[in-house]
Amino acid sequence: MARTKHRSSPVSGILKKIVNHYIVKNIIILFLVGIFVFYGTLVALRHYTHHGEALPVPDVRGLTFDEAGKILKERKMRWQLSDSVYITSAKPGAVVNQNPEPGFKVKENRNIFLTINALAPEKVKMPNVVDLSFRQAKTTLESQGLTIGKLTYVPYMATNYVLKQLYRGKEIRKGTEIVKGSEIELVLGDGLSDEKTFVPDLLGNTLLEARETLTQYFLNFGVTIYDDTVNTSADSLQAFIYRQRPEVGADAMLQLGASIDVWLTVDETKKPETIQEMEIE
Image (cartoon, rainbow, N blue to C red; front, side):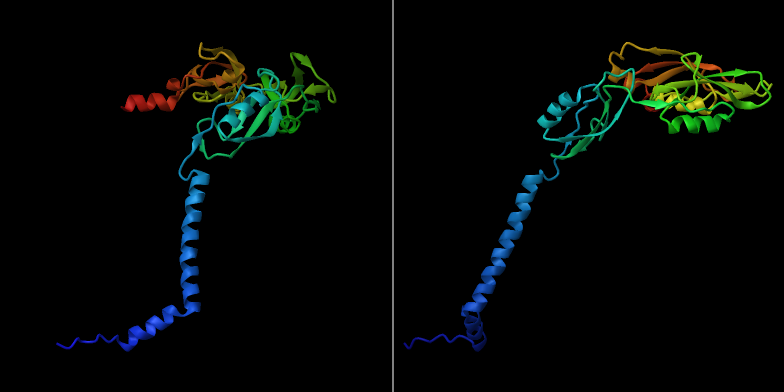
């Protein structure tokens, strides 16, 4: 029986010739190598950057700059000094602020910016704010790095007119060198009236935040009480107000210059939003 000879079609023959051509072969090889390199690079990048992996930023507040650096180095994070301030309640050289905040998740080699408490206080010259309005005095003092302290009201025809500027209870003259960040007490005119202001809601605020609010309402701090969760200078910076007296109310009013007592803690369960969530549940 005769064997039937298989004949290839003209099209397949042409394809074979094209594929066997050395230029086409090189193009195919380069294409395959390109795909391999592309996917290999993706895998390497994912491994190098720990794709999808992030670590929480440790809390280094209250530590020295070197101590903070050691902890961040162990977490494979970088650190950088971004600013320095002078806070009398904090340890000199200690970290008082960090960005990102503790607990925020970042990848390795992320820069953590640290603000430290200066070793020596920076000094500025006291400006003259007598005969200015309270608003003008506040702007002038803040431009020099000074803050508003206790407000005292006395009988005078103009309301919130600065009559005296005091430092630690004594009058301070223009040009006197003073530590940056110091509190300046102001004696203001009451406008010969019994003008009152609303009691602001200070709950959840830090002491610094509350001070700004009280200044806006022309009020003072009264007694400041820390609970037993506040043990260090770092705690005192982070502590928030969980109770105030008098309390906030629709008709709660105080005379200008009056005081509000506050209680502070670092216990997160005492935050207003946490208490509201527990009440809803």
